[in-house]
Image 1 (cartoon, rainbow, N blue to C red):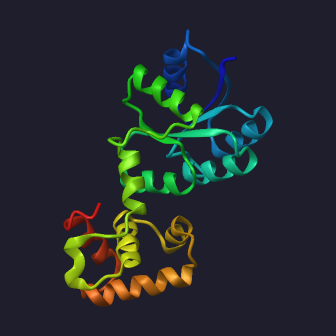
Image 2 (image 1 turned 180 degrees about the vertical axis):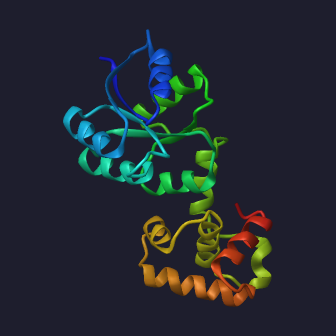
Length: 210
């Protein structure tokens, strides 16, 4: 049986391009949506094997759409699509359960291999930006930060701050309460002598934590 695909993007050109790349393959495009609301509705109605979902939708964001798609159809796999390999977008996609993340400049072979892996439940290659960011979010230890006496959990929270995530997103990612996240953030600010979370996020990037 063919892999059923729903394409979600607010540009007709992207729909046509993906359709062209998937022609004469073991896939069947069963729907097209141009906004988040219709994407969720069609997913619930059609139950596609896979959704190719634009990160930057007008109205409901792609990340919010991803979350709602997986609520109405948990078995559907979702590949996020974006013009840019933005680490913050990728991190948010990881948190909400995306299977992978593709830039729109990807070629036909990369698209097909990504779809195949996602539908089979195979993780992306370790070398992919999606996997590297996912691994960074789970990593807690970092030897060169010992002078700041950060705990393993504080290092993990610091990485999330460097990725530009909110307290609520960090709480979801680490399965802890928002109050616990706030406590960790305050400890990080105090130990690193940073004045605010923006400063410490910039510092995390400069220290090559992400």
